Image (cartoon, rainbow, N blue to C red):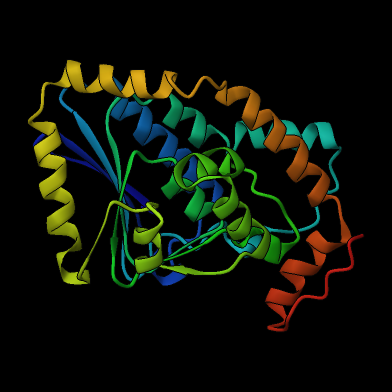
Length: 259
């Protein structure tokens, strides 16, 4: 399976399992991710959820081979986003249990968005983060413009989104994007140690505290996701959105023209 979900001592573990493709996302993986989150929310035996990637990467973003010109209308494509990739942040929004990302290697584009949605992020020394959408001529489409400024502030988020530059683990720690950085060989033991500590906390109090922290944001996540839909649909209709994947496939720098 391209995505696995297992339980271990009150901890639900979601593993992205396409290591040969750096765990690049496919439509099938998104469906499985949503099912895993929904299952974790309903299962009273699960108190904490951890997400990680198999092999040397967390997630390199959407599988670029699936990024092709889409002849459908904007309305059809918008509905497809709501029924597709945006089901993950909506499932995350419904998850009342602590949600931890355990990251080694690249977490790029949608992969970084999915890390940012978690409550706590632990990084290996090899972890690298990039909001790489601009390289494809796109805006974040999975809530990134909402989540990232909340974690690191507007200015730092703007720089990462607009430049698509790569941030290493130590910078991520310095600006508060991740909670801690550990050696690669210590990543999983440290992640599960923290997950176990939280799982041993009172579940009702833990979930209520999470609900309170969310409500203190005073923002409607559904409205924010709608704004993301309009932005990425407009960007996705541009010539630049064709140029980005084409340049990637041809192994050359993209030439964006703002058209």
